[in-house]
Length: 356
Ligand code: NAD
Ligand code: TYD
Image (cartoon, rainbow, N blue to C red; front, side):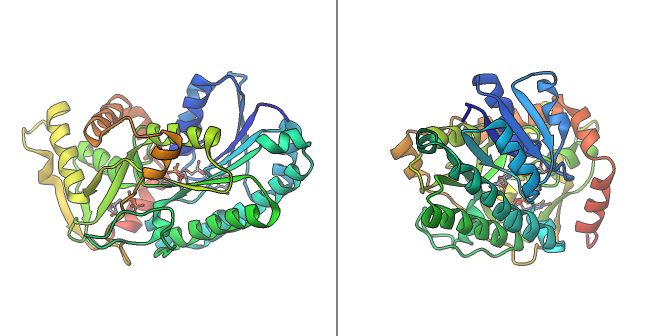
């Protein structure tokens, strides 16, 4: 076994942030397996071009022959599984891909990793880890005064996306319990930050605001999410990889619960300061209330006490510092936004917001 790690989905939002941070601070090489769906963007990894410590492979986590070959050739000491279909609204319009990648794909990946793990020597078996990146959405929705999600909360997923992630979490758990695979699972809240595809709330609102388009708020805008700066999420995953107890689950959150409308107002106010509208009017004038998402979860909140108590991790960014950095990144990287919003992106926006 080598020091190499295998990351899946490392051309997406969180995966590419993770790979960039990893290569900047670790000597161990990273193999990056990504299918390059609409959400995967090789441009995210441009700073690593020509770097021998990053090897990109285009392919599917469900392609057993390919995954077996990668494992045999590179002998990684860990697999970090980010690859997934990740957007709730897309899972409502078309759940099939979510079942295929998030459930069947994770199952195939686990089977390949189980076979690889079985062939390792005893010393390598002690240090090998399979880290599965999941979401707080598996726990369902909270009422206003409920305590935040703990690792012991029952799974009550409400969307095809969260149901498919919950299924994958269960498979990962079962592979530990039944086969002794050394797994770790993380369930995190809503990430935001650089390289976030503008189909999710925060990058969509920044993009639409600057383009002079409506800022669509689903329903009454009082749904609550906990917001985690993406680089804090990456540092938490690295901490769990190093020190997490095998077979355990860790909730990762930013201690930043906010109603959507407040998030959008904050973005508007910061944009008024950093990139004012040419007509002098406030960006909040672009806010538009639209038809609610079917089955929309009312509130997510994370109790991240366990990872703090056991592994000493806590987020470095508050929402105020993280959102300012994020907006600045989008202002400085308009060519990235331009590239990802051409082509198929337009068709998606048309489909999702056509009832406005
Ligand atoms: P993303 O949609 O931006 O990226 C997903 C990546 O996976 C893309 O690069 C895509 O090409 C790749 N991919 C999809 N199907 C694949 C397959 N079958 N084989 C190989 N690669 C495939 O997602 P993200 O926001 O970066 O999320 C990463 C992980 O974190 C996901 O597992 C998601 O469920 C989880 N998560 C995300 C958030 C969030 O706020 N974004 C919150 C909690 C959990
Ligand atoms: P999103 O970024 O899609 O993440 P998730 O659904 O996984 O939490 O959405 C975050 C919140 O913002 C969610 O409550 C839905 C809401 N939302 C809007 O109000 N308008 C939008 O255009 C989008 C994309 C999301």
